Image (cartoon, rainbow, N blue to C red; front, side, top):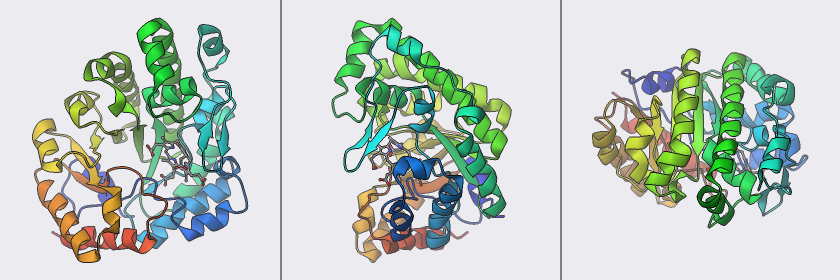
Amino acid sequence: MNDTFLKACRGEETDYTPIWIMRQAGRYLPEYQKVRGKVTFLELCKTPELCVEVTLQPVDILGVDAAILFSDILIPLEAMGTPLEFHEGRGPVFPEPIQNQADLDRLIIPDPDEHTGFVMETIRLLRKELQVPLIGFAGAPFTCATYLIEGGSSKVFWETKKMMYTNPELFHNMMEKITRTTTLYLLAQAKAGAQALQIFDSWAGVLAPEDFKTFALPYVQQIVSDLQETGLPIIYFANNGATLLEMAASTGADVLGLDWRINIGDAVRRVGKVALQGNLDPFALLLPKEKLKARIGRILEDAKGAHGHIFNLGHGIHQFTPPEQAKAAVEFVHELSQR
Ligand code: CP3
């Protein structure tokens, strides 16, 4: 069992810097496309045997030091009782967005084993196969709320901010319901066998710091605190969150994910005794190999003072990335960080 990733999460000495890649299972891999060619995305997410297959693909092909459960952050939101659709080329759609208290009252706090048992089954099956640790995950409440309120992806977050500013009580009520759902969902993943838990706050960076503090942070703090009983490392990734770093550290997460817009050495100086995960620009994978290697070397060097470093991209790998470039990045990280 390769436990380098778990050691780095805890800030312990490792023989080399572990790496995994956000969205490492996905469309850039022809092997994923082949599985996906036979089923819709949601069918894939709800078929444990197929989820196991695509979770294992990047572990075998790239040689990464951790696996991440194949699923989606929107799965528990569908389980709350709101229909979810994925449209080719357009991404996720919630045709019945939540815009008032009556809409919110219709949502339930689902029992994770009953309503998302396929996720827990995937985790149990994966643990029998894997030689690297398995990361479970969920969306952070603010990021989840944006999808429920907007009815899908958004660029300006008009509906979300309108609710925050004109009906904060409704917004907080929604955040409470999502938070409880997320906590139960992650506790169930831990019970099923997940060995670390990542909270994805993909849209945290659209908030002013004072709004992040009021409308988003307390709910992440609550989740991290409620997950302490699992004893698992908790990773909090606030995308585009360089200005929020100190607040991200105040969540109590063991590991903070970093996007590429901040120098990782600056982050080390700002957060102190917490492990860091990141932070190569996903598009840097397009660099010629020697430049890619030098870029990776600089990140490893800058991260040296960190209380644990897990190499990753600063956000998900892009769907047109050549897989051999991702494989080269994994090899460079392993080679350059040998101690
Ligand atoms: O290896 C892995 O990380 C796979 C598991 C995973 C997926 N989504 C599979 C997926 C994880 C951890 C996610 C997280 C996720 N999902 C986030 C947070 C991370 C981030 O990127 O910020 C978000 C915001 C979502 C919501 C989501 N899912 C969107 C907006 C989309 C459409 C855009 C896109 O990339 O296609 C998805 C679809 C999705 N989730 C795909 C995959 C592999 C592509 C679906 C397909 O096969 O067509």
